[in-house]
Length: 442
Ligand SMILES: Nc1nc2c(ncn2[C@@H]2O[C@H](COP(=O)(O)OP(=O)(O)OP(=O)(O)O)[C@@H](O)[C@H]2O)c(=O)[nH]1
Ligand SMILES: [Mg+2]
Image 1 (cartoon, rainbow, N blue to C red):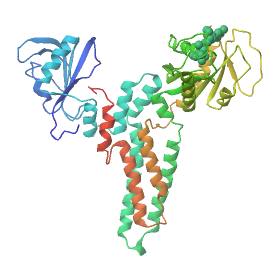
Image 2: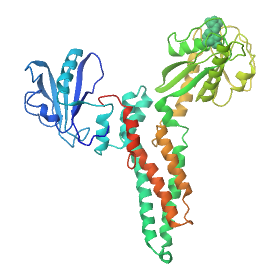
Image 3: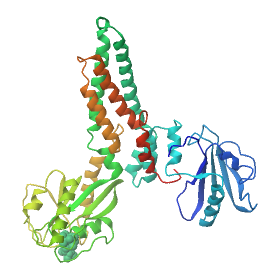
Image 4: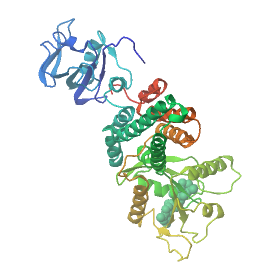
């Protein structure tokens, strides 16, 4: 995707399909060449919208009229000359303008606008990822987190750590130049102090129960329990639609059925699973294996017990009850036997919706606890976690009593790992992966 000669690219920045308005974005050294041809007048004042017609320069036909705005470099999203055309959002207008623009510009690849912005120093990698996440945000918590990241909160934190490390390295390089007798002891102490502080800050940042990653990807909740307990009925209730088949036959659900929900502003992925049972049936056994695997991976288990047989609990289900579990006794519309258990249960009737408010309240609380926004920014991707762990490991290897060269190398490795997160050093190979996530037009 790296171009040695920077060409001019274009793409529709607004979503596909019919709409009142569609926005075409053109960026690159020749972007303004469309003034006097496709846009008949001269280029308008920077960042001011002008009314204009859009003309096919080959046939002279006016295709549509709308608005145009230009952003001369470097004061644009990409840092290059950028023009935006605001057209009527019809399939035919867009197709026609696309075809005209394609005669002189190249259609942008996914994420190419943002990549150019990053390459022109408009933002660091975490901010670029923040933009992608903001566009993808489905819930309030996701929007808030992505917005903060886009504004640079995470990047600023890492940049601060980077600067501290670079200063420590500079101090060390200076030391290497001193002869052994001359090494000023306070210099080593200063470096050691900042390494100790960084180790503590990094460890605390990493030890956040995956708060930021969960907010980005959704909290994984697995509904699990014995057959016929009403797990699928509960999933349908939570999803407010008939996602899973419900029947009085035990062993109805075999596959894992997933639904994405917005729970009090937090993204949640709820999975319904096969009832836990011992069976000779190959498919049912596979279903149970998947159910148990899902329960194991889940951030939160919603264990549904069958009120009709309550207080009986099979051993497999009982073994799943731990501090990651919420236990629900379903079918409370039947006369439930009052029973004492060493764990809290929430009685509900999935069929009538009775007790569901209470369950939802408890669920939302549990979700908020795991992904509520922290005062300091949270890392949001495995990519960040991996590099930060490398950085921490290098800092923990640092030994002020060892040789100066070795200690300096540990600091350099730590800085490289940190630099990868913001996109400062040695990142060419990971750029393609990151920007491919974007859709075309971003
Ligand atoms: N009385 C009563 N019956 C319920 C309730 N919830 C579910 N049922 C019934 O229990 C039976 C099983 O419901 P499902 O939702 O299919 O149960 P499941 O746990 O998904 O079952 P499997 O997929 O076979 O493991 C159905 O006949 C439901 O109508 C409830 O709250 N009260
Ligand atoms: Mg089911």
